Length: 622
Image (cartoon, rainbow, N blue to C red):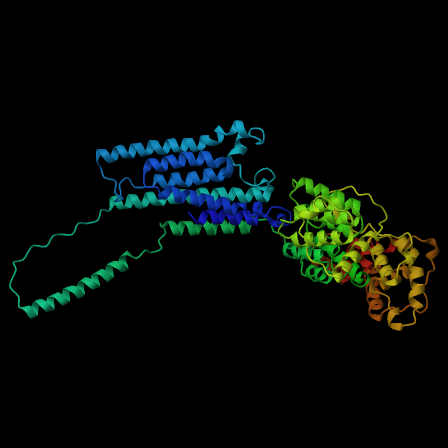
């Protein structure tokens, strides 16, 4: 039975998923380890008692005293003990003799087992008056001790996991009982044949030499017989052995976990991105996001943020997908649980970030370490030390945020003259002058974002608005690299009129630079220039009907060639070309409108360019 707790533990850990970043208390996350250890310890103590009355008294008092602490696991331990007691032989030799004494013992044992089973089932009911104020129902009290995610807030996949778990556990016990009964029946039907007695022979006097030889042969034969007996008695792995059944049960439950657990292809990358975001390692975020085969909102937003910080957004914007490739229900919860509030903070919308983090903090019953860390960052930015230290104090015992909490506590102690009641109790990490300067720059960058608006209606997918917080009131005051990033963000937001309004000033300053190497325009701004020259209607600016870029603006020949190829594919006379049909077959598309089929083909062949994204209507409308 030692295999069963390990299987239960594997199921629980498999169901943790993203919540490993959320919980404050590490003991809560791994509490099932202690609970399953309690089950085994309880069963071992029960089995070690030699007296039947002692075992009955231990089980009666043990379930009564342990249920308020361990809940359903106390009932599970009692179940193991009852199964052990039911299969225990009556006499020490392991044989049930057909005598009146043993028959009476058997009746007493059945009555004792029935009483213990009824007592075990009645214990939760006895505690109902004590827990009726917190337990939803009497049935919920019987499964007390399981985490919320496995009882009150289970999704469909979790229901499948635990239904399969209960079915496998029931099958395990049934298999043990049936095979044990078959073994006992086979032993009773096939009694061991008695060895026939050999007739005694009259003894003859033997010479000493012959007697010595016979003794040697007898000793050799006895040694050989002992060896054969030992080989015969060696335990073999048979199908009716408990170890085999336990191993099969463990394998079955492991397959259940693998098959029915919620599959998230970007889980490893998202965990790495979360850690890299804490370190502000933008290169690592870009590298990890490139490994995700099915990008989701959190990973896409992390890549856009990292490229913005690296100043490469205008050159690498469309090289990776910018829309989730999986249905909404598969990433909605994870988006809200991880990174969403932190993205809002990084984009400078501190109030919405605090609101989203507070909602997450409340939903998780104040157990979300991730939300608490975001709240502490927001309060540090707002120079509210006393509130920030309240969350830093709680983060000291977490699994993944304790070092960052100590670093922020040291930063507050170095940069703020204000003291709070939590200051003496906060662990602080030594900070160098270089690290203090880095933190100053990081907080200053967040304060300088100044988004267009500071209002946000929190939803479960807070990073759906990841591109809306861009300051465009005075774009000309930013340096050229920062201006390129903000122009690329305007393209991503499809705010083409605003983009066109600021493009002229940017091009005038860019082309006036003395260094020729610095005059190069990023890739996607070049694509936008070609689009504005040939399709001014898209930019909704009547003054742009005859717009032309400055003469010294250079377009890479490769970009210009791909632009011509894309425009050729979108021409009305080519909507039914073989290239369009091949692209639609590859996409599995059944669109009947030829113009829309051509747009899909352009997205298929030129998905890493700006142009197919812009043409949301048939080509001839532009």
